[in-house]
Amino acid sequence: SGQVADASGLVAGGTKKLAGSVTELQSGLDAAATYLQGVAKATPPDSGGFYLPPSALKDERFALASGAYLSPDGRVARLIVLGDSDPFDRAAANRSGEVTDAVTASLRGTSLDGSRVAATGMASTNADIAELSQSDFRLVSIAALIAVFLILLLLIRSIVAATFLLASVVLSYAATMGLAILVWQIIGDTPIEWTVACIAFVLLVAVGADYNLLLIKRVHEEAPDGSREGVARAVALTGGVITAAGVIFAASLFAMMSGSVTTLVQLGFTAGIGLLIDTFVVRTLVVPAFAALVGPRLWWPSKVPAPADPT
Image (cartoon, rainbow, N blue to C red; front, side, top):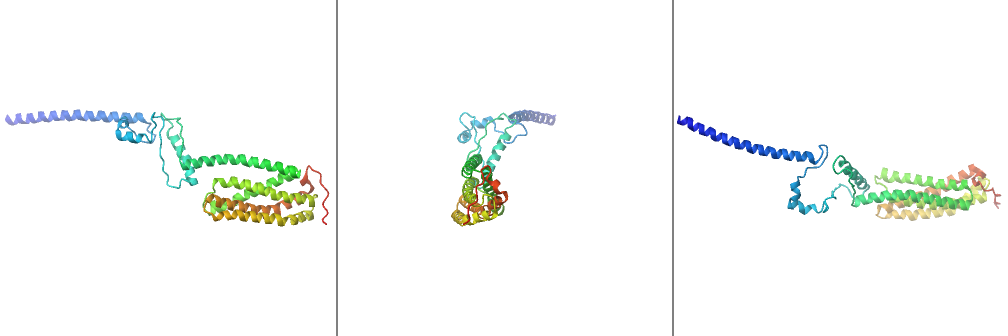
């Protein structure tokens, strides 16, 4: 009977311990359920990020760093994104837009949907400058083409000739940029800087139209009827001056390639090649051939003057 009593006491003690353990387990499960409910309410299950419990905001260690990432009113947050490339490269500028798009996409379907997302830093600054440069390039190119066309029209007094000369310098610029892309981006694996296209366009259109204007004015004097002999004579009379001017100017631009700044090196190469194309291809072949093929219609709507005496 004594052994039975001892066993009964042990059973009673174990039962009490079990009851206490069950109570502690229930408390732990309640805490876990509360935490999981908070996580479920914090963000949708398909969103990224991590759950930050409200108690963490009251932690002194968190408060020390929160000022660098959260505004005092809690309405602005800063995210720092580190890349693995040079922030001055075009790849970094392109990645800036991708990061902004990724943040905007991650906010969809959350309580922060519709929030304004902006990027700063060297890469995003270069991206903004490149975007502004592209829009300005369209404006500058249109303004330059209109101004050059009006000047050509005023000096030549021929819509056909002015339109052709303007088209020839534009085609020369397109060929130049194609060659620059081939050399730098395809062969050299180096992206062309965003400033090169705009500056090269202004240089080549202005200088190319100037050289072609000198030739076409001479053609107007020597071969108003479009005779091949008169066109050849005009090319011979102006060839030395225009060729020398083009070569000297191109050599000056090629000297920019001796520097270490990528933008200046690319600009010197592009503009120099463009001047050589305009001097030896457009001025020597394209313009004379067009003048000989079109004949007196080149001067429309002006009247065809009498050809100059070759003697």
